[in-house]
Length: 176
Length: 252
Length: 74
Image 1 (cartoon, chains in turn cyan, orange, blue):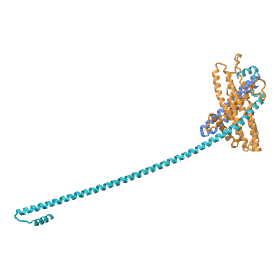
Image 2 (cartoon, chains in turn orange, green, cyan):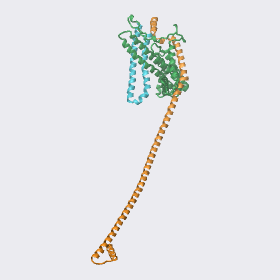
Image 3 (tube, chains in turn cyan, brown, blue):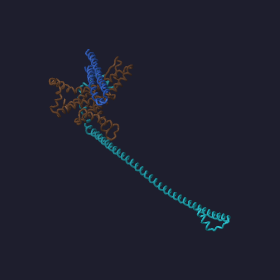
Image 4 (cartoon, one colour):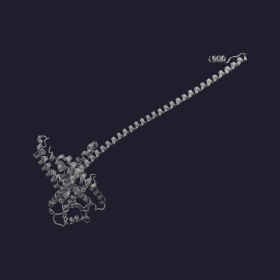
């Protein structure tokens, strides 16, 4: 602009307002109309439909994406429900197994206890039998001793006792 | 912006704030005829190319996830589209390419004019008056075509008392015909004023003492001008929408 | 002599720019006051704000234009 300014300064004292120089209005208006027509056709034929299409497409994509996200969310919720269900199932199964095992163990325990009881009972009765035998033997021994003693005593007293009488007497005494 | 004060030896500052608006042929001298290639042609062509670069080349990839240029193009599209829809109404969407053309041309002419050494087509009344007349004629024709004689109801304020209506009608008619004047002078005036003020400040830069202040002032004015460039394009467009709404729904 | 008078007139017309500044300040200030009272409605009214500022600004520009005309065209 410097050259222009110096030129203008040299040429004319005051050019006034170039805007009010009506001689070039036709020129400006002509080129303005050319520019506007070009822009109008470029915009209305190419640019605006394209941008509108892109925006619409994006809107569609966004809507689709939102729908997809919604679907995925639902899927996730379903999965969570399934997971919870599986968890509950597993838990109840585990409880079942525990109960079963417990029952089995109880059964085994009971059987073992019963067996042990039976064994103990058998042992006890055996012991009792042995004790009874021992007692019996002892009783026999006592009888023998008592008979011998009685015979001796009777003999010492000068009597002659026959075996049969002594035996019956001792037996009668032992019973009483 | 070059320093315009070349008259320091003459004992004073010489300002030529209006020289930047001179229309001159690019090739050779002589008169500016209708078809001459001048600086007007050049900067309008640059504005057209910029619009094409942004709106056509920028969107050529048609990406669903837009890049930078495409984002700007979509932003401009959405901005003007929403303005037309909100201000002028849904049935004005058919005028959207027309309004978009006006907006894009003014915005790019304004912004390109802010480049140093640039010429600003929108600072010329020839250009803005033509733009405003286009809007005015469009609005008037559309109003009469769509509404017939009912369009004249725009000037007959039925909500006012009967005695006042003729007076109001005269005022309304005057204001209707002043519309293109204010519409065009607002745009050209704002752009021209900003550029001229920057030039005046640049003239002061010839004085060594004042020059730092002058540079600061130019910077501040430049920032304001960037804002004004956009706002004036916006205002021109939105007023077009308002006028269009009057034409489509003249229920006053 | 006529040129000097035109320059004085231009200076007087430039007062209009200051008046426009007052007008723009009024518009913006009132908008801000309203926006602080009802912030939710502020966003929808920015278009109106800009239109109001543009109208006020335009009148200042007219006076500036008169000044320019007096400076350069008379």
